[in-house]
Picture 1 (cartoon, rainbow, N blue to C red):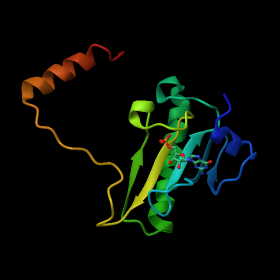
Picture 2 (cartoon, rainbow, N blue to C red):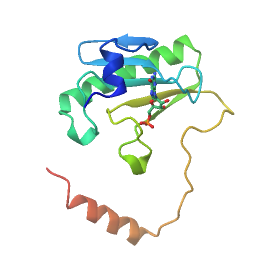
Picture 3 (cartoon, rainbow, N blue to C red):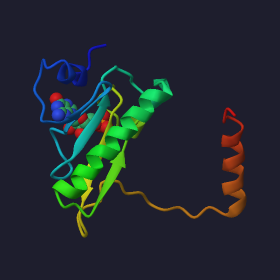
Picture 4 (spheres, protein in one colour):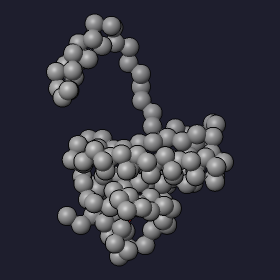
Amino acid sequence: MNTIFSRIISGEIPAAKVYEDEQTLAFLDIRPAARGHVLVVPKEEYTSLLDMPVELVAAVARTVQIVATAIMHGLRAEGFTVVQNDGTAAGQTVFHYHVHISPRWQGDSPIVQWIQSKPEQPELQAVANQLKQHIAQ
Ligand code: 5GP
């Protein structure tokens, strides 16, 4: 696979780059949710978080922290939202793992919004039990 992000990483197509290290690249989203919306990608191509070695997950997280610091200081943001869409059902459109970081200011439009449900405690416990069966220790 040669994703659009791999073509940005190789320099084949341009992007407004913000930060780069050996394993990761951060650049502005071409269709930003807010001014300063950045994408952080691993240079090695993986579709999903679930496919990635944990060291690379950590490298991306480190870059997210570096970029979020720059967003807070450089753009005087009041907060930021971090999102990763994993899978078509989640809204992933570029199948090269990436993390969105979008600056936030009081009163702006939400980047992620959901309708809160109100499950009873037994339902919460049942879901927790279902998940715990699939957590590798
Ligand atoms: P997803 O929906 O997969 O979570 O997010 C993909 C993001 O990649 C979108 O927000 C979209 O605007 C951005 N994007 C798609 N193509 C390009 C491109 O060629 N350059 C840049 N900088 N961003 C892109």
